[in-house]
Amino acid sequence: MTASIGNRHFVLRRLHSLLGLLPVGAFLIFHLWENSQSRFGAEHYNHEVVEALQGLNYLVPIELLVIALPLLLHAVIGLAITREMCAEPIRYRYARNWAYWLQRLSGVAILLFLLLHVGMTRIQGLWTSAIRDDLYGHMQTLLSNPGFFALYLVGLIASVFHLANGLSTMAIVWGLTTSAAAQRRFAWACAGFGVLLAALGVHGMLGFLS
Image (cartoon, rainbow, N blue to C red):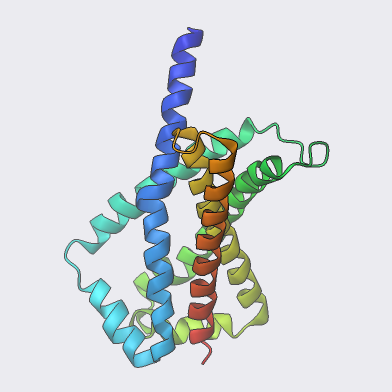
């Protein structure tokens, strides 16, 4: 019985990390690149980016099966892991313990942020033609509000940290970085990757305000 529970836990942990990389992590990278196209202006963003994506065959099934479902599974498993969280960052102040705690906290924050973001864009756009026709203008209006800009900035940083730190942890879990030195080197590489992604995301946000 104990072995069965352990095996199930083992499989769920690895499924969770795989979903975090593909397709959830891959979609985050694509979405940040997509939003970075805002620097070319409203016409380019609305017609060359948004309309091109909306014109894809089977867009809704792709969104549901390739993005929403894996994201939901990743979130559910992540919340289950968070319930088991026993990190004590104040008592044990080493970096890996803080990263573990922040990984769980950022996951919850991202989930709440996504509910708000998807609700105000994709869902609201289903019955509001103005959003579908001019998503650039809609995002410009949202991000022109300092409160929403700060909220989106927090959501961006939390998402990028969650992916970058998740990649570092995934390498340990899957046995790709076995020594302490290898783990440190890869953690720094993931941190650099996260900084680049965050810069791309901020660049996209500012592009809506130009």
